[in-house]
Length: 127
Image 1: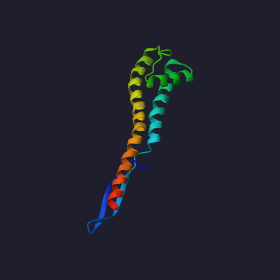
Image 2: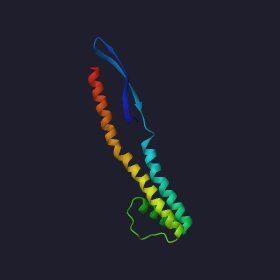
Image 3: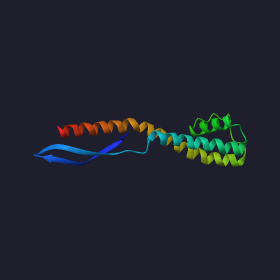
Image 4: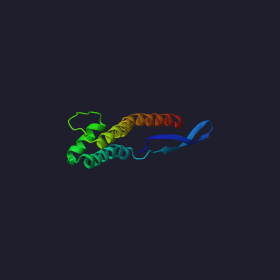
């Protein structure tokens, strides 16, 4: 999948462009990166709260999802001091990771538009 590209070399014959070579810069698979940026904080939060609080896994996963998405219903809260300290850092790091995933998803249409515009320019130059 090409996210962005740049023209590396063009061959000009008689003041006319005959051919252009385009090199693509593909980012690491964005869908895998997005998935990892969501799964890592949720699985980490679930495992740590299971260990610190002893809650059932479904409640731990629910707490992790509600916390990193900044919904914070307040129905499941940490009670031990260790869990409270973990929650402070988990909120900051987990929210940033999930926000970065949303940013990657939101940038896809912009990247596609930029690629279309670059192809249009190249098509005009080659004609």
